[in-house]
Image (cartoon, rainbow, N blue to C red; front, side, top):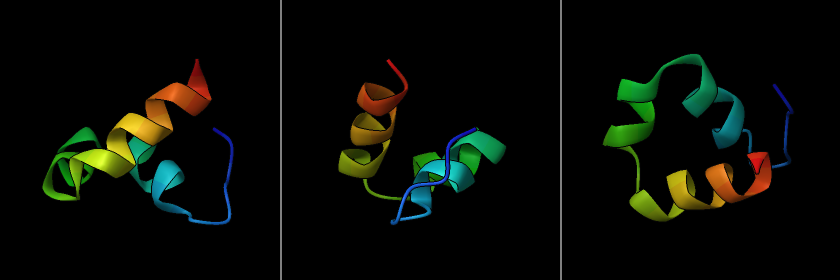
Length: 35
């Protein structure tokens, strides 16, 4: 798991449900970074 300045990426990786509650844009950006 990579910790970005946003920190939302790490949270999304920890719990998918939490990422779903957050804005979709953050999820998409995190997935693109992982890829």
